[in-house]
Structures are given as C-alpha cells and as structure tokens.
Length: 217
Ligand code: HEM
Image (cartoon, rainbow, N blue to C red; front, side, top):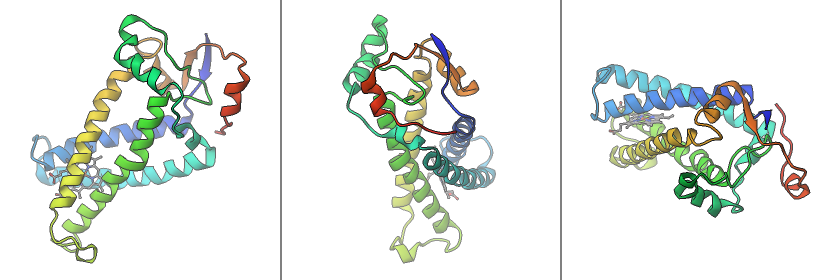
C-alpha cells in the first residue's frame, strides 16, 4: 500500500460546496414543494434562489477547471470492467471479494462511477439548472408565462424540476452508502477530505499506461 494524492484542492472544494448546495437546494426545494416545513415558505424561496445562483457560479468555475486540467477525461465512459463492477456491488461485496477496479491518480473513477457521474454532469445537473432557471423566469420577470419559449403554464417545468430533484435525492442516498465501500469504511471519505488515500502500489502494466493521459493541478 502507498499513500497517493487523489483529489486536488479545487476538486475537494468543488465537491463539498456542491454537496452543501445540493443539500440546501433539496431542503428548501422540498419545502417549496410542500413536503416539509423548516424555514417557512418565503425564506425557503429566498434561500433556494440564492443557493441556485451560487450553484451556477460554482458550475461555471468547475467546468473551467475540468477542461483546463484535463480532468474531464476521468469521465470518459468505458465498458471495461463495467459488468464486473456491477456484480461486485450486488454480490461480491457481501462475500469479501476484491475490488474489480484499482484506483489510481490518473484513473480515480471505476466504470460505474464514470457512467453515473457523466450522467449527472451532462443530463441531470443541466436538467435542474435549465428547468430551475425557466422556473425563475416564469415566477419573476414575467410572472406567470414564459411566452417567448411557448410555455403558458409552469406545470411541465415544475414536473421536470421535481423529477430531477427526486433523482438527485436517490443519487445522494446511494452515494452515501457507496462512500463506505472503499478499502475501509472511512477511506473514501478521508480521501475527499484530505486529498490523500492509501492505495495498492501501481504495477507496471504498459497497457494501462497507454489508456491514461496525464492531468495537471
Ligand atoms: C441552479 C439550479 C436550480 C435553480 C435555478 C432552481 C430554481 C428553482 C425555482 C425558481 C423554484 C420555484 C420557486 C418558487 O416557487 O418561487 C424551484 C423549486 C424547486 N426546486 Fe429548484 N432550482 C435549482 C436546483 C434545485 C436542486 C438541485 C433541487 C433538489 C435537489 C431542487 C429542488 C426543487 C424543488 C423540489 C422545487 C419545488 C418544485 C415544485 O413543487 O414545483 N432545485 N427551484
């Protein structure tokens, strides 16, 4: 085993700010939706709008970071070990089987993570941002219509936004469980807090090297 620096400073900042913002957006969003009572409706709306704008600013910086560092390559989907990873989570994990994929600095996501995180980045987070911004436009500047876009009712926007919120919530629950399935129960959490993780030594497999492209801080 050796200590490896897996998650860089900005990446950890982005991850935890995103986690806090999504948590606040979910709490206030479900209050707006009338599922819970916590802040009171008016404050929930103000907090939701403020968190939403902060989230959009964070997303802009994060997109910039992914492209300038080359880290976007970590999310290129692969079918290699995808089935093995899936079988590990539904069966192997309960029989103490070894992890089917080895985490390295240059390939820190397993094939299932690549697919799920890519889906979040290109489908579900954009869905929340676009439907949320449309919701804002519907609510505030034109108060009741988004006529230029052909929306005469808020219902389709609200339904899409709410479906997205439930999907994000489901993701967070599964994510919290999967955090505990690293080398030890806390190793993934510690890595995202400190950046460092104890990993198996890399073997000199030339085929693996070929697939990985270097990234910069
Ligand atoms: C940039 C991202 C987002 C924007 C711009 C945004 C914007 C909005 C707006 C304007 C509303 C309506 C507020 C009102 O009625 O005055 C709303 C409602 C809501 N939001 Fe968001 N939101 C975003 C992200 C999220 C996220 C990440 C979640 C959940 C994880 C979420 C969950 C909800 C829910 C559940 C509602 C209530 C929907 C309804 O009952 O019609 N939102 N959002």
